[in-house]
Image (cartoon, rainbow, N blue to C red; front, top):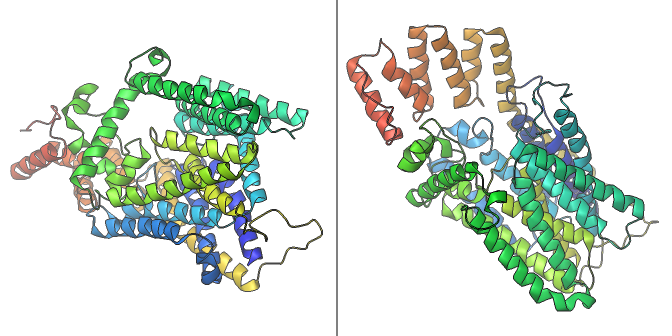
Length: 558
């Protein structure tokens, strides 16, 4: 079994960098998320296959309550999927540009569990190293983008690197800078390595500044606060500073919270007008959760309900066409999509990680830069999760870190005396090869995961090809493929409208409504088309008022 868990460690170290760095700008209309989903799902199902090789040893590897929490999360998401009226394909693969449906969350959960079962400190230390190393090519690419030398010609000097959005790259660079800075505090770190780590952290902070996104700075400051506390806690000579530092941290947190509401001395550094928009998105997510507390509105279906539940303030703040398909808060996304039980199960997993952190810190006698890096990056991820979405390239690290912290605690237990739960293997020991049956299962699992995630990848690839040829027939056929999204179909409708083909527009609008009955765009087209009968136009008007009750632009036509 040691060979199995070592293989889990190998998969754990590979999935983070591959997911963050993967892009497909030449083959896909969505060049960011679908290819990342391809890697996450393939590796996750390979991990699941390894679980099946010896289920008895697998399930005793972790506390039963962790399995209950993980099983509860997957079970309730499955129930939400089955009981929701949202489109099936949307709930499985997610909406365009997000892809955080059932397949993604099931895969992330498998990765978390696989990471927790490695239970080898050296592997978890390597995970921190891998995070920092992933930051190197990402940093170089971001600098190339800022210099206007991007060979793909898609960035327009925006440093989004391989993550598609400056907010996501800002958050990732914040994690890398935190890891690099924390590792530089290690006593055994050689001077040249310390300088390189600090240089990487400084460059990434400058890139964050260039993006104009506060997410990276916000999580970096939060993480540095935790680093300082752990360092003081584990340094005997600084015992006197613990309470003053803690009070200073509480004051800093309070001032930062007030600044988010444009109050206090830090407001001019933290508050941005975009924060007001997030309040609107959070409010809508909270209302969805309250109105659908048990099973939510459907997995990754927040956008279908946003117009209806956002309220009058959000509708009129900047105009009714400012919409979103995510709450920009992972916790609210979970409760809105799957109900409070999903959020509770996710919270239970976070609780086990927090408990593990406490136990590791209590057992350690000195400052451990590697575990501290795991801890502070995990805390930073939790902070970022409160203001952003579960973007796959960044979110993968949050789930890896959660599993790593849980597994790290197991590796520090006194009873853990054999590999791979500790680091006592000698250099002379020869690792046991993984059994052939396990290898076969892993390859089969990888193939199943790849096949499942290749469905939307291929549909999107065909849609991109159809866009390039501007073939109406190809556009429609690709928009109807399994794995395509409402957005693909709505773009097809938009092309028909721009061609002035009213008959085709009417037909496409009705086909969209058959598949996506809450499509605001399709109902709008049905209402305004000259060929629409009066009774159907009135029905479209009433439906639009239901979908967006405070939108002043919705008026009767004709």
